[in-house]
Image 1 (cartoon, rainbow, N blue to C red):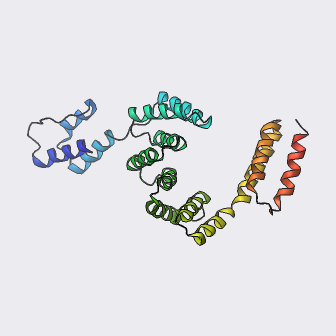
Image 2: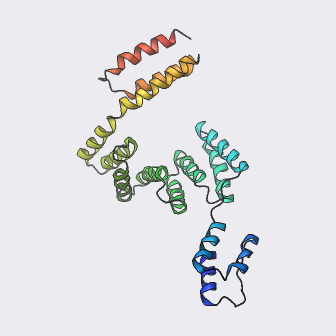
Image 3: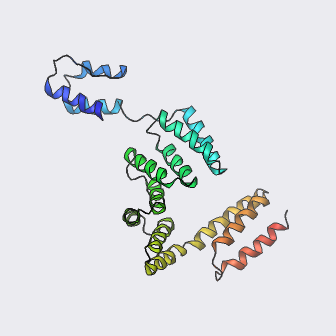
Length: 246
């Protein structure tokens, strides 16, 4: 941003003065020849040349290592890799989110909130980052901020059970039991839909002769269902059938 402002000031003041203490990437020296071009087009080209760098192959490979560490609950390794990635490429917002999640599950909620706020500055309206920011803010008792952000997200995704669950947690801390119950009721409407997805996934695993993974998915589906769900009996029978394949 500072480069852009300096460049604009340079053009506006005098196109013929000598540039002092104005550092440009070698590629941007092209602007020494672009100054006669209308300022609007010059700025567009300048911003394009200074756009955030896309992750390269090495960075993507490291990111996948960090994701694998996260899924294996090795949050220390995940944090180490993701922090290094951000240091090398601050626009790698996916690595920023991963770092924050590792901080969150390491119990460092304040650091997670700070990381997520930095990610938000790099990429506005990053839904997943906003969701984890709400969770982090609740953990550090910044409830008003968490509720405001949660309600904003809910206006964009009215029935996201993750947002509803987070708002229910905040309401419970604030002793607003009526709101907590209402949010939880709305979130629970999705339990059968989520369970059905697990069941379908189990069918796929069973079809490719992987009954162990199929059984895991069915058990997760059963956990999602309420005691009075009509799906419980069917899922229980599927579990019994799958166990016979082992």
